[in-house]
Image (cartoon, rainbow over all chains, first blue to last red; front, side):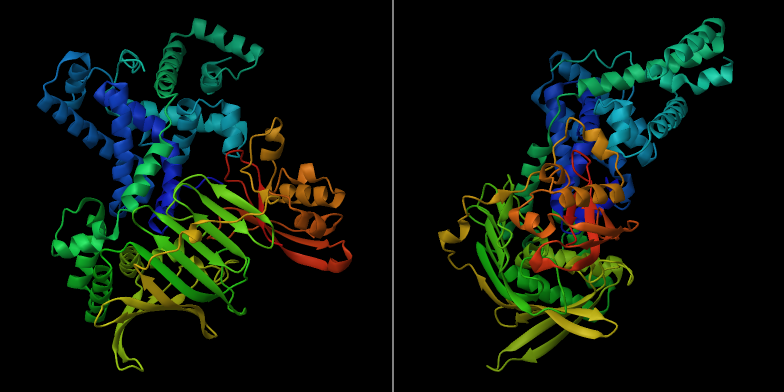
Length: 187
Length: 446
């Protein structure tokens, strides 16, 4: 039985710090992907993602709503990205990566922080989306992993898509979200 | 296929789960309906975006790297921890990782009754007194089964000895031991050995705690204890009192008493079975001169009264620890517990209910099919084979949960086969499936 984010956070706070690894495992790819979008550079995104998780662990005591762990974590990741950007500016930015960082860190970006939108999903919907797309599991594998029928997985996916699209629309994201996703540096 | 039917199928269609007939019907409708086609294209576009984001992160593996840094941060020498920083900065804010606990303490000092503020102050001074802690050795006794988990308690049992050796610098190492089990973390990995079971397990990291020893480590790290107790005092309304005592040698001791409530309901199956789910009165005794923590006593608090369950009578600070303590002489023929791996037919096992898994395990034991039983329990030791081989199932009940356990409990009644165990056993099998293979594993309950 997988624990919810809230349960995991509470266990970490109650003297089981190793359980933080479960949260890292759950969100490492989506946080990395979010940071790729933010900083436009794979190696810097990985560095920033690690830093974000460590800061999150050290600040767990300050998290008022443990059930909102993921959106809180993305907030930390955003601040880490911002710091990286400022550090890069101090060193004197040049090249494509710095331009991408400048664009994203100032909010002047052509594409969309999809993970921020995923963060607004209810946790059970978010888990299915992350397992299916970020972990690359098939729907059947997601069903096995979450011990639910395949039909429940596809229904949850349908609902998740609906909520994602509503949120994208609410944020006035009308263009295709995929248009710039893969144009950044490849690992 | 009309518009509503077609739209109902959009997700299974983009996921490629529609059968050929339905897929063709869906495509035929899309060719004739511009609105549905536009809707479908939006969904397909979002899916491509999600797939692309996932693929971009496909090779990302940072759990180990993050947890290594987390452990380093967590086990910085005592001088780097909350209390020393807190005292150095005189209740200052902006302490990064430790700001929360600092804020809690500050809040307690400013807003709580005098006794609670005094308790916080005594414990803080205790932490300051060990600000340059390089090692600690705890010796005490606990009411528990000698071979059971480290945090297991049983108020009806006799005391058995329990010890923790811990070296903080130059390298983190520790050893926890009671008569039936021992764990040694030698700086690289933690090894658990169950003495009478002749088996063990290995955690391949320099973990600050492992194998149910967290509660003992909390006591060894007084600043952690303080922040933990203070946070709970504030969040859960635990009462804190202080008093003074004069020992036989005339020395005055400061006593902090914490009335800890687990929050576990009285009717919970595991209530009062482990330190973390027991209601306890915790008594920390400090020397007023040296400020050092000298003894710790935990009393189990039940409606029927109090029972002393943990008595930590000796704490040695900064004493050299014999290097032999970090060595563990293991028998060559011992068995190692293995994390369940994904089997070729894993789905068959992962789809079982807890009851079905318990039955399958017991039936395998009944047939002495140890390969099959091994899919539900690791390791299958000779002791297990002797105890359960050839058993007869009398009944199995409906599984239930406990608030403090991640798995489920399946009630069972079995007839034990061997002459020496010629009896009926009625108990609850603990099974859990929070492992990478998502198969139910027998975790205890014999």
